Length: 126
Image 1 (tube, one colour):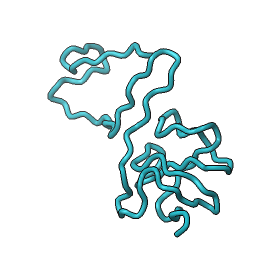
Image 2 (spheres, rainbow, N blue to C red):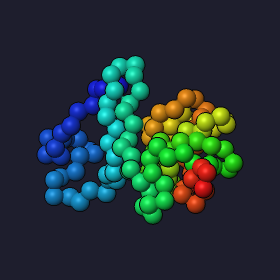
Image 3 (cartoon, one colour):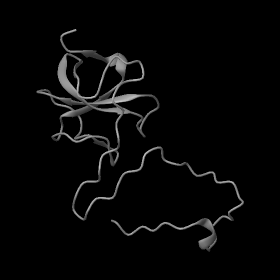
């Protein structure tokens, strides 16, 4: 970890290098995860403050499948299309610690995190 380099395409050589004029078919990530020090978790991805429809905000208490939790992440994810909300469940068992498929979206205790779409959540007490 932490041994990657940045280079312009003109500085690369070999059979996989493409000339600078060639169009790239590579997918550019929409978020960049900062490198963490050796033995530490990577920094989480930045979150939006509110859902696109304005109904739920970061840090808001919500209910998902009858279970109470706190919104810890709002935004795009790499495992599905659309806007997703990362929720840290209060008492119930979740599925992860905020990291899904190696991407750290938010931090919470192990097996307390879930992802849901806006339609699957309701504001607690509403």
